[in-house]
Length: 378
Image (cartoon, rainbow, N blue to C red):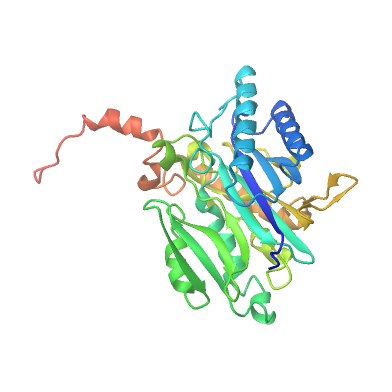
């Protein structure tokens, strides 16, 4: 029986250390990642790769044929992050190894700190892929754009005029608190989906599939570092992979939700709401109040089990490096400044349920014994 050849796209990120605070990945750490990825490609472990950053997160994009959750691929990423973290310690960089929450590799980096988005596909004649990586924000930050892209006809014209998309899409949603999952189909269960994913701190879209044939369309990381570590150790800084065209949303429809900024949880000390700013790779550095939160988007074609390349160099499009997103960037600066005028007052600062895992708990614990009972006479 003929078994179609499958290709796996793995996007794995980790905060291994930053120069001057939490704002960017310095060159020595990039060099380590490039070295390890090149060696893995030369030995045939992976077919192609691309190393980039989203703020202070080191991002490893690997295309291979080993399938999802493959221990060799995950070990490659883990060893790369560990080596980069060791270099960060040597250089006394800030937050060295921040996302490395375990001491020994156990076969899969999921639940160990690094964020993971993976997708195994059967290659189409032309398979455009968009990968997203965000910094200074939380795992639920992709709920809004994923809904807009795959369930909102006001964003995605293909939901109305492409007969291959009239069937709708299925959304796999993870309850990150109870560690449970549910699948909802749109358009039939649009309102039920919104009832969940509007609570971005708890319910996270992990996958989107086409309803007619279960074709995988999108995959995003869902791990929450605070729930793994039991305390605040940095924001989740999620990553996402999306397929496009040929019966799926067009690349332009995948990018359209980012023409305007929207608010995400994270920013300074993981304790504030902030506007998400789409930027090109050259502007992927978080400065003002450790932000604003940034997101980058890279586009490429999958070809014969790897990233389409020319003379050995991967063909990568820096999709947010475009004046079409200037409005979103201007909005992010303006609305970020408005939030900062609020200082430490809600709604600029997160609500108490999200502050539970932050360092403010140490302050509250110190004050707890000074509280007295209020009586009716008071």
